Each structure stands twice: as structure tokens, then as C-alpha cells.
Length: 329
Ligand code: COA
Image 1 (tube, rainbow, N blue to C red):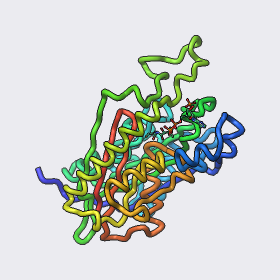
Image 2: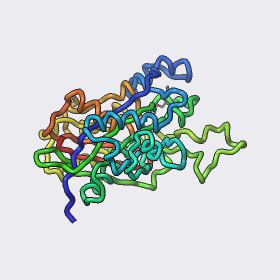
Image 3: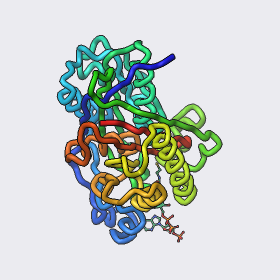
């Protein structure tokens, strides 16, 4: 079945006000600004206010995307929130967002694909709109990772931050840009190298294990790094080829914002100049599903690419999961 082309009609992002710098972290765990900067490129991250949940961050990003797309919340018929830090295990964070926006007509649900979630949501929405099942979709990547961070573990707490990014998708009209190609993938044999081990049915939090900080991110950094470079490079190459593009046709690459060394390795392997690769991780750290969504919105608003130009988004996360999109803006 051939699918109708789908365009990104608007984007938005929201970052909480509170800034946690590397200098602040030096007072919390045994680390240094020099170590964090040289290993990751991260200088600061944002932390949600007390009482501010993932759906609150998501709602703020969504309002901006809807305004830019010039689509009213009541005209949405689909909302997908990608998150690994939901407000509650059930109902889905998307349901709170639907209520906040008063988007009463919209079917709303979450997906859990870690840092790849926003592009997984894009692929789902693209297919559902393209097939004619839905018309106006809101996809959001939103995380309050600070609530699932072990603030005594220097291996992980320096890496992550809170934030949200959103996009409105609808059918592409004559002369508008469109999503050209997408690739998503999973390797369930690698669940152990990056996860939140506790708090689910496999390991509920009990009085006996409450002090073990099991409901926080756990990671084998070097393993994750190795897989990230390989999977992102392969996924990005596939969508570029499928879209019929060459490196010279790409105005901007929007990679997952986890580590500057991973981003540099991807740029190198794709033979893309560094000035065509968008980076904002020094400000926000790794915001998982929100990262590529925030980066896409910031890059677009900063004029890094124009309507009609081609961009490539590429991500990687726990699961393992990966995804890439080639988009004519
Ligand atoms: N400050 C100071 N030292 C730290 C530290 C910190 N915040 N975190 C870890 N260390 C120490 C470790 O304890 C270890 O010490 P040891 O050798 O005495 O045991 C040492 O630094 C590890 O250093 P190294 O092996 O050189 O780290 P690295 O180059 O692999 O960098 C990461 C670590 C986590 C930055 C890197 O592996 C990485 O970015 N991996 C991918 C992570 C990622 O992207 N995750 C999200 C995917 S979506």
C-alpha cells in the first residue's frame, strides 16, 4: 500500500528553568568539570522543579509546536508521548497531556523506546497518517530523568537532564516538505547494558531494597558507546541511501545528544563537516527521548536549515533501540 507523504508542520521544546552545572555536581559527587567536559562535552543540564512532572514538560513543548503548526489542540486526533520517565506507570503520560491541552478528540498513548522514542513515534505517526487513519498527530519526547537518577553514582548522574520536545505531523500538501525515509531497529539481547532495573514487575521496590536505588539508570558506558556509534552510523546511512541523497545534499544532521565523542565519531563516519552537525548537549546533557526533539526544534528555530533543505535525525538508546529519519524540511 502506498502511503501519502507526511510533513512536520511545527516543532516546540521546553526546558525547565533550574540549571545544574558541572561545578554544582562537583559538590555532590566525586567528579570534576574537566572529567565531565572531556569525556562527554556536557557543561550543564536542566532539572524539573518539584511538582513538575513529565507531562507538564511535554505540555509546554506541545503548545509551542501547535502554535507553530497553526493547528488547534481540538483538531488533534493522535498524541504519542515517548518517555521512559512517565508520570505514572498507568495511565499513559499522553493521557495527562491530552487533558492539559483539552485535545478531547485525540487518541493518546505512550511508547517506551528510550532515547529512540521520538523517532519511533515519528515512524508510527507517519504510517498512521499516511494510511489515512489519522490526520493531525502530536508526537512528543519528554523526560524527567532527574527523578530516576542515582545522585550518588558519578557514572550516570553527570550525564542526564530533564526536558521535552514536540512536533506536529500532518499530510504534506503540494510544494511542502516531507519525511523521505525512516529506519527503526531493536536488539533485545542488549537489555543489560543500559536500564532502570527496579520499579517494574521484575523487581518491584520493597522495604527491603528501597535503599539500593534500583529505580534509577544503570549503564555499562563503554559497551553503550561502542554500540551507539555502529548502530547510528548504519541507520543514518540507510535513510540517506533510501532517500536518494548524498552527504553533500544534507544541510544538517540532528544526532542524539548523549556524548560529543559519539557525535564526532558519527560525523566522521558519515563524512559530514562538524558545522553541519547540531549540538546542544553542553547545555542540556542527555534528555533521552526528548533530546533529538529539542535539538530538532532549536536547530530549526536557529535557522540551521530552511524549508526545502534535507536533514537527517539519528538516535540510539536503551533496548537497545536505534532510529534515523531523512526529512525534506
Ligand atoms: N567523574 C570522574 N570520574 C568518573 C566519573 C565522573 N563523573 N564517572 C566515571 N568515572 C571514572 C570511573 O569510576 C572509572 O574509574 P576507574 O578506571 O578508576 O574505575 C573511569 O572514570 C572510567 O573512565 P573511562 O573508562 O575512560 O570512561 P569512558 O571514556 O568510557 O567515559 C562515559 C565514560 C560514560 C562518558 C562513556 O563511556 C560514554 O559516554 N558512554 C556512552 C554513554 C551513553 O551515551 N549513554 C546513553 C546512551 S542513550
